[in-house]
Picture: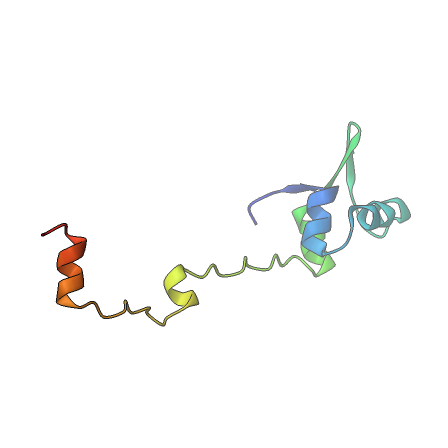
Length: 89
């Protein structure tokens, strides 16, 4: 694990519940936390023992080529029209 301590909002994100729900679990003694000044911190080991320490991987980002693999073909151009577009007289 990368972090040793998690704030209540971070723990809520990890557990998949609201920040208020985490705070209520701490107040009821269902989730062990320590007080640091005015803030609460939950150790990574407590979250790990809670059984839900699994942050889902971010969704895969599709590149534009993967979104639409069909290529758009330009309409056929006659040689005369091509010469007119070049500015030739």
